[in-house]
Length: 237
Image (cartoon, rainbow, N blue to C red; front, side):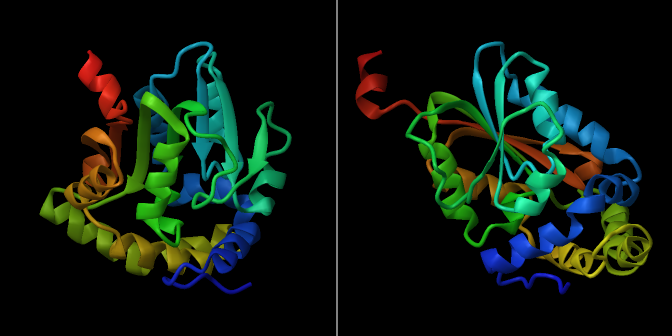
């Protein structure tokens, strides 16, 4: 099947992920040289989920990350708009639901925390997705975004860009069930804003206390933020 385009038509993106679902987890591990395990662990730690809390794992794919969140004792829900991904993860012992990040099927303030890993970049409107995540998060709740970013050390940045352009598609042809999709992956990473620019987008969507930390020298960044309390509640304090 063909890869999605950078216009990110939701149907094309969903179909693309349906096509890579069968070997998605293996391909991620190979292409990241095993770094994906550490990124997932650090993301789970950043969420700071506690027993009894409700956590939404958006763009959860095959729900590997959701299982890690559930191990904290929190009720963790995997949501994705790719039915192929959800089918590939249905053997995992967490609840799964089909959901579009731009129109989440949840009531206001339903979750104590929302996290999205390597999925915000694939939405047709990241600003609208960030606002929608704020809507379903309770006041005082947390957001964690794990996403590819811009290496901070110039030599690493040069090597990384060369890897995206040349090596990643070649490796994907050997291990992925839809290697053309990883050409889109490389293009979308290169077009994505850097750490500071993404932090500004998160703040513009209504989140506060926005901060970030780099993983693997900035190849990936973890952004954290808090859903503010309504103004009248804040003033009452």
